[in-house]
Amino acid sequence: MSLLDVRNLEVTYAGGARAVRGVDLSVEAGQKLGIAGESGCGKSTLALALLRLLPAGTKVSGEILLNGEDVLTMKWGQVRAVRWAGASIVFQGAMHSLNAVHRIGDQIAEPILLHKKATPSGAKKRVGELLEHVGLPAARADAYPHELSGGQRQRVMIAMALACDPGLIIADEPTTALDVMIQAQILRLIEQLVSDQDLGLVMISHDLAVLSDTCDRLAVMYAGRVVEEGPASQVYENARHPYGKALSAAFPRIGDVASRFAPRGLPGDPPDPSALPTGCTFHPRCPVALDVCATEDQELRNAEPGRRAACVHVGAAVTDARSTTA
Ligand SMILES: Nc1ncnc2c1ncn2[C@@H]1O[C@H](COP(=O)(O)OP(=O)(O)OP(=O)(O)O)[C@@H](O)[C@H]1O
Image 1 (spheres, rainbow, N blue to C red):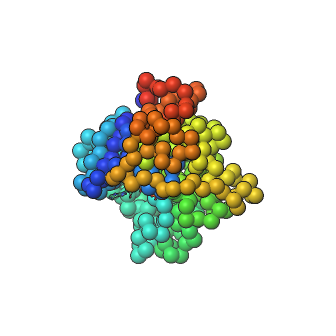
Image 2: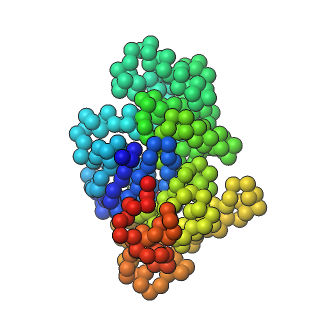
Image 3: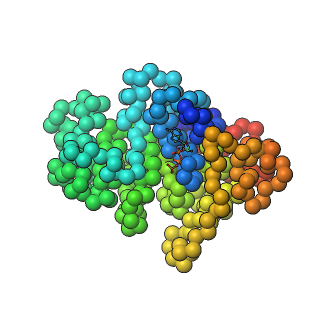
């Protein structure tokens, strides 16, 4: 049984935006899955859907099996227990996620008191341990968010996410607001925690270079669908879907200083999810589109062992869409 198994997930917002369309993915304990794609492709919607954090009125269908139990059909009491203790989210921009008027120790203690039924002194001890675990002195528990640097605040967010010993961490752009040096430190911290505690990780980013550096596998999303999936380094170095290729070219290799100053962009914008193009949704921007792409969408196909892409130019159609995701 996978730690997380998402099957045919569809999310449509109240206004009609089809933000996630038929997404399948799975994560095992100790595995790090990166979800890449440009702004608006549905990455955050997917993350929020995993813990039923979407606004009321949003239509969600499919299955989200966390340790074999479907989050979508759970009673609310069970969903609340799953948040923090089963899976927790590290959001981008810690300054906005932390409460400015409360000491960080109290904020980390809150889910421990609520979900672990800890005593105040037990929670305080645990807060100290968690802070040390993420590389901060236990005494920083008394600080207010504004007294910490951006990197320290993001460490606090990670400590909070770990507070109730979840099996899965969902990190939504965890380093986007940080400078490059601090970003690298936070990524190493996340990697180390995931491997030490055998956690599963879903890391969301628009930056394919960051994801390929941190994750084992990568799923590339476009207009709400996964259009390419496979081992992270292979997807980054040699994408098979034309959108994956364009995204990869836009994020030059870490260390490749010369090309970092001249990334290639992809012309055009992603489609409006309330008015998606017919056929393959990427065809209006695709440099290698055929006539058929304007009318027929493609399922994910086996590109090579362990790799799939949803493009007419790639391999043969896959009969069992989830056969290679594990
Ligand atoms: N509450 C909402 N109501 C209606 N539409 C929404 C809502 N939230 C997001 N959307 C739309 O759903 C689509 C996917 O948005 P989402 O935020 O999931 O993308 P993203 O890939 O995470 O982008 P970003 O990196 O900019 O956050 C977008 O077109 C967005 O405008």
